[in-house]
Structures are given as structure tokens and as C-alpha cells.
Image (cartoon, rainbow, N blue to C red):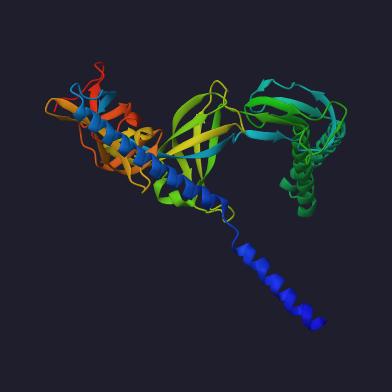
Length: 386
């Protein structure tokens, strides 16, 4: 039994592998079908053109002319842009934290208030520091008296130098202790570290404040930064000082800014480097974390042949072409012209070869004509004079 089932199992396994390998790719089938349909369309157009030409030759009045509109080819500047998403941030977005621990006894501001640098925000209970200062001041007063007497005696060569130096050292130590205590007392007032608006206050009067726990946040968005990650592919195309277009979708606002920083580090996780722009924001409409779309120009050509992308057609063989209106014996005929295209952006395509200045490009009715059709130019069209 074992000898019988082993060959059977191998055969079943081989059949399963063969079926898996021979499974058709549904996308490949669709590609083939698309190619077949395009071929059929081109053949139908050619057949239509042949029949129309035959009818025109057989009819004394001739076939109907195809009504089209044309646009002369003119030279224009062409620019290609890379679009990346950016994020708005503010370097003046700071947390407010006390420098000494203690109970909050007073708050001087509310959320939404505008403050200036150094303005009081809150007060920490510092009664123990005040008592310490009073004690030090009492001791210092005595130490100063002792020092003055020891100094007078020392000047008269009475007493020992050690007594004089001890009195002086005691007085100076208390002076330093008093200065330190007064500094600590000043820190009981929590002050604004920057100009800005109170964005948040997280602790109330009566709660314990600690230097490690912020009690609020101040944000100043009078100037903001826009940061973006750019693919390493464009390393040579992006330089500090380059002008970029920055668009804020939430505001419907676009502005031209200079790149102020180009990162020198490629992030190994996404193969990008950072760029940063900065702009004034006097009306405060640009908010931190707002989305921005940055357009970086990576290609430019002056006086180029540029046409609308939608006018470009493609044959089943992959050849790109457009239709021109060419004049012969006072009549206009459609001519299919193959072209070599370059980059495309914003609905326009750069034409490297095939078209020349003042060629009459069929811009309306282009999908209704075939090579050789006689044309009737719309009177409103500006036809370039040859």
C-alpha cells in the first residue's frame, strides 16, 4: 500500500505546482486586451479616412469638412516641480516651569492672554525663604559689627590676624548667603520666558508646583518655520537660498519662500533629507502643525515648445502624436505628426522633437479627425500666417 500511495502523492503535488505556475495574471490579460482595442481603434480610423476619401472623390460636392479650432505653437518657459508635504512649527513654542518647588499661591494671567518676556505668570509660596532672609540679615548685621571692630583693632595692631580674618570671612559668607536667598525668592515668581500667547495653564492655585512639571505653555507664532522631507534623489536639485512655492491647503494661500536650511543627513528609514523655510506670520493665520505643500523646481527650460498634455495621443505601438492643420493649395488638411515628449507638469508637456514655432496645433476636434481630412477652421481661431 505504501508503494502505491507514494507515487500518487508526488503526482498530486506536481499537478498543484504546475497549476499554480500556470495561473494567468489578470492584469496581463487586461493589458493585452487594451492593446487589442487600441489597434482596432486605429484600424477603424484608417478605414474611416479611406472611405471618406473615396466618397469625397466620388461626390461632385466633396465630403464634409471637419470643423476644428487651431492654436499656433509659441515658445514659452517650462518649469517642472517636485511636490512634497511639509509641516508648520514654531521655534518659540515653550513650556512654562517653575525654578523652585512650592504651592502656587497666585496666578497673574489666564489662557489666551498675550504676555511679554519677563512678565509674571504665577507666584510660588516662598514664606520659608523670606524667614530665612530675615534670619540671615540679623546674623549679617552682627557679623558686620564684629568685622568693623576687628578691623579697627587690627589697624591699631591689636589682636591677632586670625581673629580679623575669621570676622571678615563670616561676614562675607553671610553676604553670599543673603544674595543666594534673595535669588531664590525672586524665583518664586514664575515669569514668561518669551513674548507670546498663553496657550495653556495646567496647574491651579493651591496645587504643588515642581521644576520637573510645566505649569503652562506660551506660543509665539509671529514667525513660523515650514519643515519638509525631500527624497535623496533630489539632493543636487535643492540648494540653500533656492525659491520654493509653499501652499497651505487649509488657508488657500500660497507664498514664495527661500530655503534657509538643507539637511546634511539622509534618514536611513525613508531615504530623505530635511529642508526648512521661515516666514513672518503677522496675522497669526499659519498655525503650528498645519499642513503645507512645497513645490520645488527641479527643471527649467526657457523658450520651449509646450503643449497641453491632453492633446497628445498614443498609438498601439507606443508612438506619441498630435494633429496639425497644414495648408495646401488654399485648403487645410489634418496631418498626424509624431512627437518626442519630455517632462510634464501642471497639464502641460514639453515637446523635444516634432513641432516648430507657428505650427497650427488642432486643439478642438482633434479626436474627430484622421490624417488627410480636409478641415474647416473655426473663424474665431487665430491662425498664424506662414
